[in-house]
Length: 144
Image (cartoon, rainbow, N blue to C red):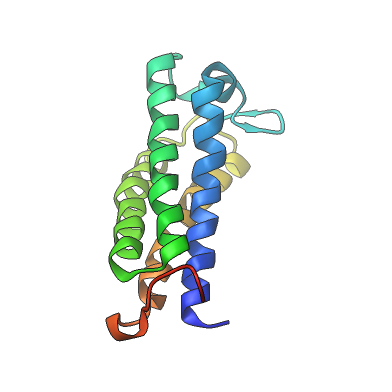
């Protein structure tokens, strides 16, 4: 698989995450708060009182991030891919750090799943940047 295709796959994985979590938090904020990540776990509810405003803002942020990421995956142009990947890093690193310092109250398995899951986004974003072809190799457009 060539680098351009790997960049596209990485961006599509990030966009899928943002779309799922963004849609859930935007359309059903109470369910997101009470039930995230699902399977009987309740990670958001353990972190403080419910705020519909905050959950909907989180959802909208993820939907906006998904749009930029999908544009990068569709076009695979250097500037849009860099913008999407850097946006993910700026968004996800503080998120990982917050949860890394606030895991008390969670079972060990949940702590590992929370931090491990949150680390995927910045790792994928960095890989996208590393794999992004040089300027003269990026032709743009959806083909590729």
